[in-house]
Length: 439
Image (tube, rainbow, N blue to C red; front, side, top):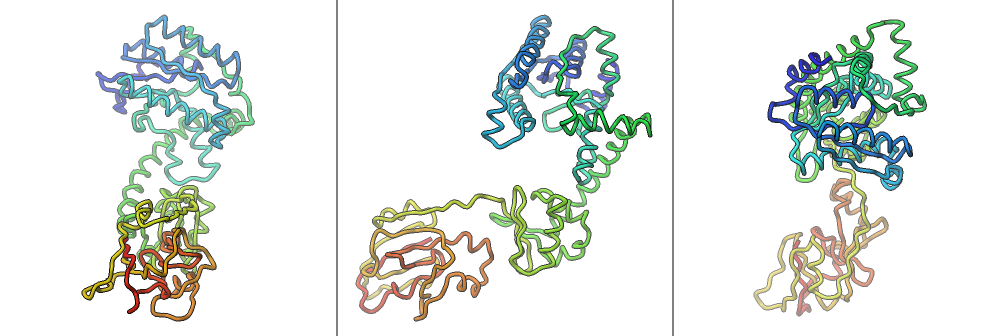
């Protein structure tokens, strides 16, 4: 076990001689075996322990064991207690996801504050194949078939080579004390179902199932590197990164629109999963305006492109302007000033500049997002027009429309900011003073 541990670290270039490693130790058999292995090999380590306050006295006894091991072996200890259930409720997470988020955030904080180079966690070979089976059951791309990696950012998994049976034998041989988490036997959790119900059946078919699945995952890891490089090159060919969104060009995607595997990998970074992939194909084949909302992004068909933006809650932004100085509170208007008209005055021919008869404007003014039902009299027209129709005529995309603010006086639209003023507020031969705004 010791030689296998050293060999795995060396073959995967996990640790340099100068590295200081923060060991994530729960008190369970895997992490306690890992702690002993690092200690036996004289690595420079510290121990981090999280008490998640989920199992009452049992959690406290876990912490007591870890404290005792750290003290006996003169290893620096960092311990913390989390109110995990409260955090889960506040952040709308499962208890398991809350615990994961809390511990990894804290591990990284401790690593940075105390000069550790790496964080070691005790995932083993069985954990890895369970992860692969879980991903496969839920639906996954090639990445999900690769399982966990020995090194991911600054997190190392030096026990990934060892099957659970091997770890138990080492623990027995060396009399390593550990704590058993009773929840590990509860098959209400997906991982435990896989561990206790599925894998024993698979072992009846193939007694070496752990090794077989591990080798398969390793091959998929190689495939994934090849596919990732190809998809990265393809994504550069079919998309353009704009200032605040990514545009996928439909004419370049067309050769791949029936290839679900390529589309999945292309759009996976934007939250596409198996269920949403069908919707994505539909909007590619459908009319302009089609929309797919993923957990992280929105993908909109706009004529000959797919526009991908981050999914952000649209707040009901509202500004009240009591005088000309208040325009500075709205970032969309860079300047506002009153100008007395002279013989040399010319109305700027720029839609980014609004030039309005100040006598026709009544404070306070309102700046807000446009809404369905809004209408105005476009400059040069004597008939009222709905903003929604105006935007259609101007070929505004859904995202263009979402960025639009309007300036309003007494319930009347003065200016579609950055686009067009209302004819009722334009400068005429009788105008003596104007409000000039730039955006």
